[in-house]
Length: 247
Image (cartoon, rainbow, N blue to C red):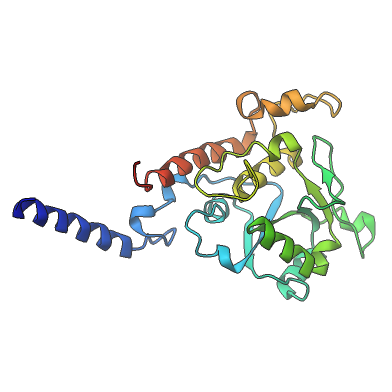
């Protein structure tokens, strides 16, 4: 290898390391890994609260950073046991809340108009409060621990996505224990599309919304407000994959 080539290579490595230290003012990620081009501003009718496990906060392949910067009504709280979390408990008292979590007691989301959580308050009064979708951001094991530790979460009405959606994820950039598991962003967008009646096939009734429709959802159904973000997510996947060394 010539001295000139070694010098060029040294300069390239130096430039890469320099760029990796400079943070984007908006997304606070290194310039070289900036996600601003994938942010898609959406005024979501149903507010979202992400309960994030501490181990996910600095996970560069995580999707909550993109999700929270895209949805106008989205908040992130970090922790593991939320039972005595004052901010969360205040939000629960002032919202109709659903927990997106596939527990044994969870109901499958469909095009049905759901009644949100109505405990500890008159039903008529609760129905006037804003709606809130809560998701857990963590590995399956850590999300389970968060759920089991947090008694206030266990008291909420729990919902899950149809299996044909839950098993059809496009999260290519991170190894997960469950085959084709959805990212937090995908799960949230599909749940919101169902709750906000944003699916392109919204003229269908519940009996018509079968496995055939859901199996072809990504090709045949427009998720309305949330489709642009799902498209950006696909680009985000490819962007992250570009950092992998070629084989």
